[in-house]
Image 1 (cartoon, rainbow, N blue to C red):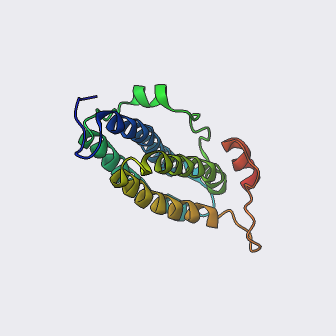
Image 2 (spheres, rainbow, N blue to C red):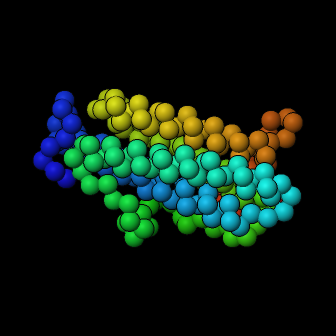
Image 3 (cartoon, helix red, strand yellow):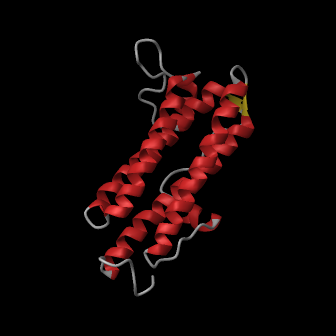
Length: 179
């Protein structure tokens, strides 16, 4: 961490915000790679619809990662985007589904998106009183992530509004429940 940050913040406040953002950078990098993995490994009914639904999500999430990394740098910190650092510092497990039917991947992706969104909301809470600029960035991203989550959940919801993945705690369980 440099000895400076943005005007109006103390160096320790900038450091705290940058640390929260680094966690989000790791999550966003992991998410865009997971989305691309699913894009490459989805098969079965609705293949093309899901395959094509994911590319814009990948592009948007990559852009979010870039925005977060640039905010970290603006705060005077180092944005670490290396694979080794991501794996070392993440607090979630590796995506566990390989080649699978569309509905199985979407079931697992439901949990992935939920975790990323929960992490963003926690970071909004952690940074909001310190840095409204970062809070605003994360709020905007959360809205779009929630929209993408809804796109996924629309495939998992029945006409009564219940999700097939309800109660699942792991990606494999969510994939099984979805199918």
